[in-house]
Length: 114
Length: 115
Image (cartoon, rainbow over all chains, first blue to last red; front, top):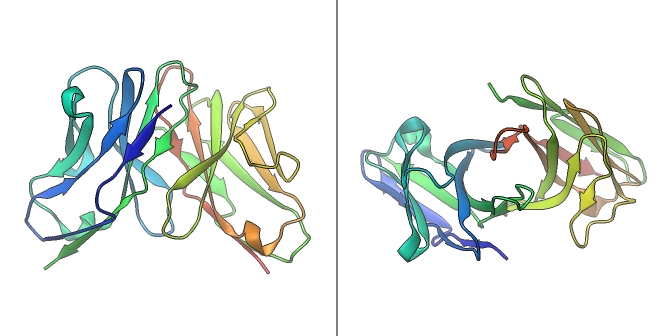
């Protein structure tokens, strides 16, 4: 069984500050990990994914995430927040041979303040 | 690339009627499509997985006779909510995956309101 825990349902940062959104996973087999962003009343857009290649993954819009097996984490970061980054962020896990079913975390609402 | 569309984006219907939602992969062949529902301020819950030409596999607790899924071609899947009731009001999102990728690409969602 797989699960994802996103610590912090709401995160608030100042524009220009570091963004850190936390994701910890539980999986009995090597995982595939994803970060998606959702803007209000829209579907999900893929930010980045880890599928057992490089542990530091760079995505769109300046986001990146690092897979740390020892910590079972896949935290999402961005060096400098922009107002347009305000959205809901979801971490998700799947695994090879699992039918590509995604298990989502509960989401983190990012607020960016001036 | 990897664009998925949904139609309609919003639908309001009366209780007891049926509603069909379409999900299309516009620039790739989707061997597998997934249907999710999302309640306000909550995460996505997988309802069912459909492979082209096969019957859909429903998650536990999802009524297959109420949520009819058809995946007749490699670019189109439909979800029909039969005899809709107010408790079926939700945001329904589909995703699609091609044969050579582990990534799901999501549609923009359909907001269903049942009066």
